[in-house]
Image (cartoon, rainbow, N blue to C red; front, side, top):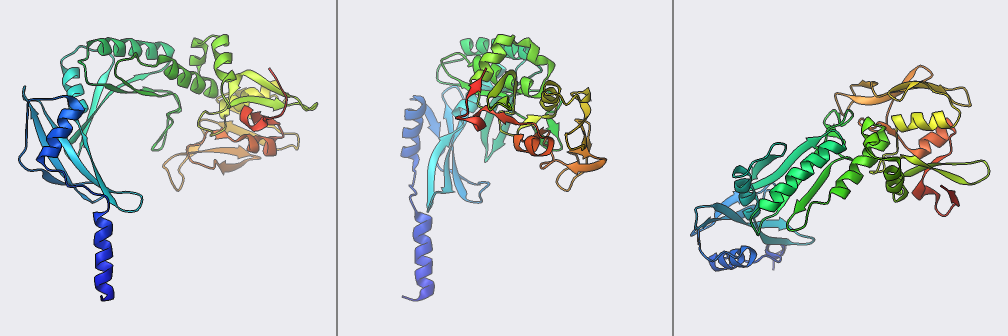
Length: 344
């Protein structure tokens, strides 16, 4: 066999991979098994659609007895070693949109988009603190109590805070996402995300949580902050944490650490200066942003009068390593100190 023919044969085998040919009977069985529908119409042939991966997929149209239309996509994609395909549908997204349009709501909105003619639907909302999150949760629970059986409520609630956006980056640490089927939404998870973000950035919303709630949540976090003392013990703070996505210590939390450890910074947590033991003068501010190679705006700080860009344009956190090396303050996240003896 010629080399070119062998290569073509091997390519064909790889492209065939683990794919399965789905016909109308397969799609009908899928719809019945997945959604329990017994009476519906199916398009005679699928429509060819091009995916973002540039592979050709096959779109089947399903019309329910009451006229509701959704789709089943025979999606082709490259697996670990070969081409494969699988079925998925937008039944839930179509019915979530229909349900939303038939119900009343004050705070929650519906965000939809189409990809390959497949609908995606998500309940959305914003909050600036705990009270706003709880209000969204109450409305979500009301919708959950009214929704028809067989659909889930996909939600994505956004913490709208002062330092969320830098260039095209959005800090999502305080956001709350989930899917509600039968059980109630997990408010505790959302409040935990919010608390960690508020404490990290020292936002006023941290005071919507009691000191006991803050200490309890931080005690269960590997990102709780502490300082290694000269006697070798590690003193943990009940109300200081690093970023839960492991970006480090925020500008505001560093101000608190400096204040509590004798550096006497001048200013406030938004904009301050301080002097290290070697005489270096640092000036740090959330307002220090300028254009960078990767973004129209990016953070920087000033050391001894010289502007220095942060490692990432959206970073308003320093690593504990940077703080130890540049400032001389022996701060660590809790996970970094195991198995060093700790004191609460």
